[in-house]
Length: 155
Image (cartoon, rainbow, N blue to C red; front, side, top):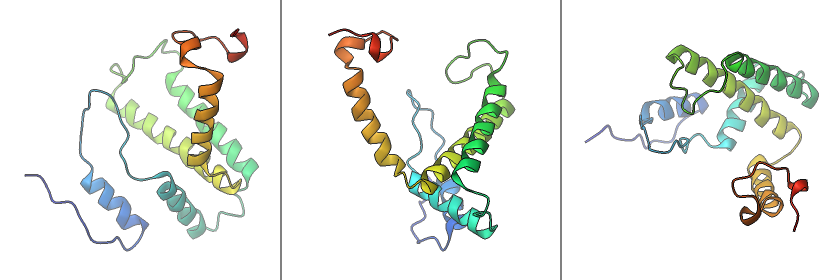
C-alpha cells in the first residue's frame, strides 16, 4: 500500500503545513474538488501567525487589506487578459501559468480571510447564510438555465 499518514500532533503551523504537503494525494477526480485541509480557520490562524511574527498588524487594517486584495484580484485578471474565453481546467495553459494563477488566487484568499477576521465576520457561517439567501432569491424552479438577475423574474 501507500505511505502511512502521520498521526503525531504537529508542534507548530509550519510543521502542520509540511504534514499536509507530504500527505497530499495527487488525484484527478472526474469533478474537481478541493483538499479537505487546511480549513478556513487553519488559513486564518496561519496568516495571523505570519502577520504577528512580522509585527504587521499595525498595517493590516481593514481598508489596507481590502486595497491589497483588490490589487491581487487585478493580478489574477492580468493572467486572463487578452486570452478570450478560457476552458475549464485551463488545458491550454502551461504549468508555469497555472502555478502563477495558484499563487495569485492564494494571495486573494489570504487577504479575504484576514479582512474577514479584522472585521469579525465568521466567513464560513456567512457563506452558509448567503447560500440560504441565494436559494430564496434564485429558486431553481424559476431560474434553471437562465442568467437573469433576480429582479427580472416574475412570480
